[in-house]
Length: 243
Image (tube, rainbow, N blue to C red):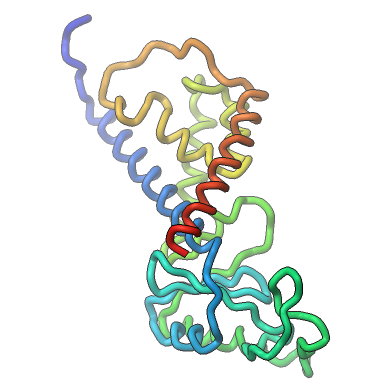
């Protein structure tokens, strides 16, 4: 009845708590991934020293690039030689990677690489090592989060995706619209938690009237591209601010 206070049911409170927790996990994952995307150049000596600290987070981007951090806001990067050694006497190519004729070739393909041996020993000491799988999808910001509990981020992302698919009529976009926003850059997941089924800041209010218009598949695709651009600029800003 109009004018009566809204009954704040336990389920409404539980739903709000779940949304806040999932949103916090996703935002945390995005910030951590953003900070690790634009690291400063480090040295082999700095890497070896960091691997002695069990609080260090190591992100092995690929076989040639390793990033690490023992402080949430500061990341370093080192390009290793082709044979996996950490010597710094090899030349840099145009992409900033060590290569060319000065890059030594491995003498024995079956011999463990120096970087792999160092990381394996560091893991035994409690250092967290995250290895990227090299795929273009899912986006690395929520799949390969370089953090001790980074696995929580893809879990939260997929839980949000299931919640979106299970909802019969999302408020601000149809399922196809949200689908594109989820899968182009992955930014649709935190946006969905923020807005659906009604804005999180109004989650304890009564049901809101239906939105005047909703994004369809085409609109969601365009919005996804825009969100990917904005989030990319945000990552550059994070890197410039804290890198």
